Image 1 (cartoon, rainbow, N blue to C red):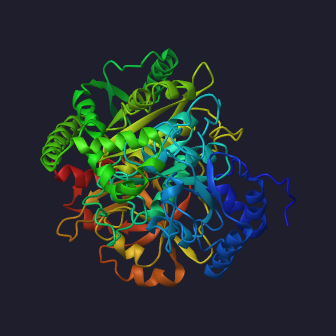
Image 2: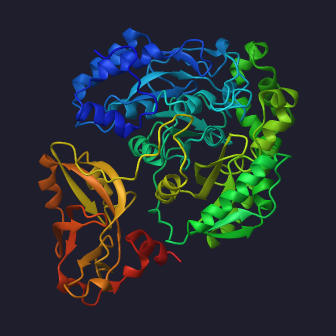
Length: 604
């Protein structure tokens, strides 16, 4: 049993797994010590699991397998209190609304199946209506760097529990920026997925047609690990969907669209941090292109100035009939504006949304992603109290349009302002470009030389995940088996674990093979003496259970096969290779850097 002063603050997922897999520590010991360190008067928490509730989860965990078998074995996390955890009250930060769900939200269930452990439910702006973190009867959640400043909302508690290192990741929700603004204000990562990528079954709706579960984490790597566990089609969620086409990755010199003349609402510290960040990201290798954000700003106004307010009312209409007086005054006033919109207004609003979304999507064809300040200002709690609606609206300047336009987004730390507060940026890309955002985000975050969240922990070096779990074979896939591609299901059917997206060594060439269904590539190692004719090619690494590996290999048709593949960092793994004779007459696509870029080129 660990001593009560044993500290796990600031541990990443990797650190938690290493403690179990290599250091002889147990989940039961570590998590009981951690739970005992959580404080009931901390306004970030609405509910902390009891010792008995923790033991029940640990009993279930021990019956599922060991630390080598589960990707999130014994990793603690927090859940925003508008997401159901079986047997634990869901309040949506409104005590009169409280109910105890019988089942976990689908996303929570998937995390538990991967071995993760719920430590508690976190505070939020009531009914997920707000970007400030102050609209809760459980108390305002202070910023993790300076307590007089807002933490951001609505996912305030989820963000600050991660920023302070109490848990390595947490779940939030994001309708208008609630998974991004708190990340920017607390120096952490906020992953806002493509709508429908994660199931929202078991989530108290804000605007159900726009809602996403989001992920807060100390690193992009951790956020992506969690996202890959939660991603799934869920027939119980009418808005759940699967990627219609595979994502592409940014080029080595990505092209980002930035707003022409940002309005900083008097926050000169934020403006200075933005200008510093633009210099840094240009030096990092990105090309910055000024574009007209008028369509984005116009679309953003529809969220609270249009009929989507009525969708918020639809989510809690029955509750409000009897309990309107039990609601936060600001939240109630916002939702009651639904009376100003008719069904005709709703249709007209949807037509306007579709037209603006199309305009935005056409603008984004000329760039890899949009690059924006996560928020144009960072207010104090007192400033929000003096103008709760006006300040909140300002915080959503670069977030409110994103879900309406069906985009993916990733909030990233950028720098510390001169006053010591964090300043964050957000990358926004079309739907299903989540992997591209994460790949760039990992490299950017590792370059900014910031501590993790509000902890003293340093950013871990980007190191290869060298060893697959016992009983697994590490496999590099390059084409139709990539995430989102037609044959990826063959890996999922065998319970393979996604590890990372990476690159081959620079002595490979990639070809599009003719007459293959679905289309397949051929990866060829350059012959000795011609290594300089090759390039690094994007691959994904998957860990395949040994007992399932044979049946997977049996599905591979000639001229493809499995051999040994060299990666850019010197590792060698099993991977797809191709007979040299098969590439005669094939299309050389090496210059595109990977299969996804080739598939995208066919769609133009």
